Length: 231
Image 1 (tube, helix red, strand yellow):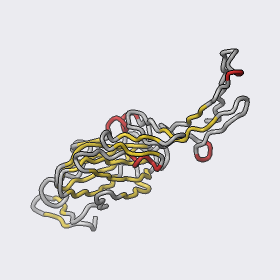
Image 2 (tube, one colour):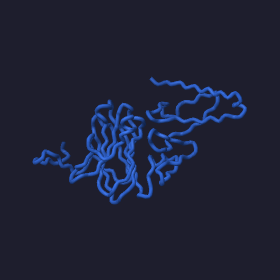
Image 3 (cartoon, one colour):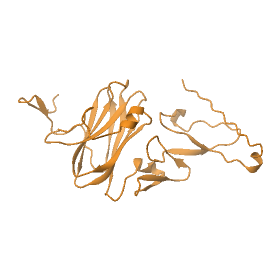
């Protein structure tokens, strides 16, 4: 493919670097990854670290990313993840496709690791666009997903976010990320989705709070109507 050297004794390609190089606490973007395609990143650590590797799907819901992580083995790019060769994966998030956030969290020893992202050939029907971020902390601390999205404080003893007032973010099977705003409801007044364009993405939430005054509570009945304009 013009990006390596052929080892004619084995028929294998020797590649100097992967497609993308991702250093500690850095981010890379994936754009228009075709169905069945792969994108790779390389991580090098000089000591044992706790980590969170997160990928946020920002493209169409009909793409279907799978995130994998594998230690390098030998020289060249041996150890690149494949569908059958990986150490860590976001299996739950991928299998149930329950949110735009895919993540792997754990502990990595010193060494080189490869990240693999594929737009699943059996489930995706459109190209993938996503943002990939790698966060680390020393072994006494745990980094938080999305760095609490700017609306909370990371409790590094647990890796959970303590969200600011008015924010929450309990994504399925994931720690809080403080991603979603809690909006106030007013009795007898309609309120539209806070999502961009009024469209709530798969796995995302709209949250609302309603203060009921004592003089409104005597009937003990609350009726909330919901009207969907989805296809």
